[in-house]
Image (cartoon, rainbow, N blue to C red; front, side):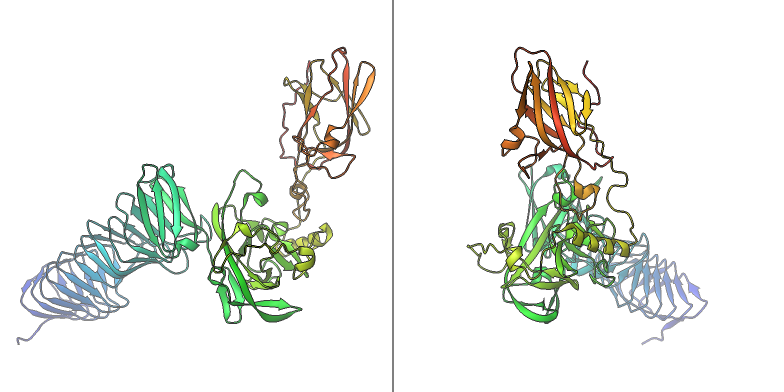
Length: 606
């Protein structure tokens, strides 16, 4: 065997090598020539740059590098850990094997077979066209693009800040890996069969993102999820399929973007529930499993008798607490320690604070506890024990399911449906009292708010000015001509047969604070209503007698009733009088938010 040719430190050679054995020592280089059917060893610190490599075998050790080179057909190149391949091409029939720690950067064109390695660097791109990417890692700022019959063999792991673009069948697995969030793009015209794993997120902004290029939300007729498959039915009758591990148990929503629709995770199943064996994600709990319950301050194990899963689609037209937005209790919000991670619950889910259960919505302060308005659709999970229990969710004292009659909101996950509702009561069956009085809830609310550095609550500058006026059935606006104490007197037109009693309207829970458990939009509270015409006085009692009355809240007492800001009132017929008066007794009004806009023009008739 002939002695190898040594390329020593400081030497660079542009020679066209053919059939040789070559050792490139540290500091040496094979430089802008050709290497054909050679056996080449690049030692730590050695370099191959600008070479056309055809056939033969090359081994790059240590920190050796291959830069701006073409690896042609039948060439076999091995780069051990610590080496670098940059701005190079792997042609059809060529093989590049990268050991642990091998860096691929710049632009890599892969029409052959590249195994291993980490694509690294801002703007780094591996363009796999008719080639194969085997077990690759794509780091932050880098992109792997696969098209033209290119394929994934094994798994391509896309780290936070990295991205993948797939066009065609592709196959294999894409793992959206690690902390933080990654992006991938697929083509609506050629969706991959690739299994996508690791898809997760906290909300629409903090989420892995899967863009389906060439598709808009208006083209989507329906979406169905089951197991690891998402079926997207289009308005043209066709169906698209995405393979996403666990998508059946993951809330997700499509957003429109300039390049196509974007799938994001909007509610991550994963709230950790304390069990005798450690913390377990809530969606993994099943009937017969044991959870830790707090009973008189002691931890005891209790068996799960039922688990359920529901789905919520937010109605953005409603107030936050009614719309369906989940509540986020930030890490440490309750006492500086718990929850141990951000905890997401539905608005009515109760937390045990100060020995009493309080619905999450009544603890919202907009900072340490807030509605997550980025989530438009999500799955929620619950579980039941034989007796209602105080359980630990992310370390915070929370509740198991109490069957007060709403089990139909859930799909049964792991047991035969319970056909007979238990009809349990908060008063007699709950593991702890349900706080109902403002004083208790406000004390807890203010303690949590103070911990978050908050000092103000509710509307900063509320008003008690009701802007009371009437709107006649012909659209005429009437304002009071006299106010005497609680009595507001209006002159009615001869033709008026009905009026709307209009005013400002606000919810006490918004104006005063969420610890006030009154979510009615209150206008004014009206007692006696008198109609004056033709020298006669007639009391109108419709608002006190009708069970359901347009624009009026349910009766709370027999002598008065609240409007909702625009309340209908029918007037007695009077054919002979041109002078008619209406007197409204306003027992209560306000406070109102200054942001509330009047419900009718501020103009006065004639």
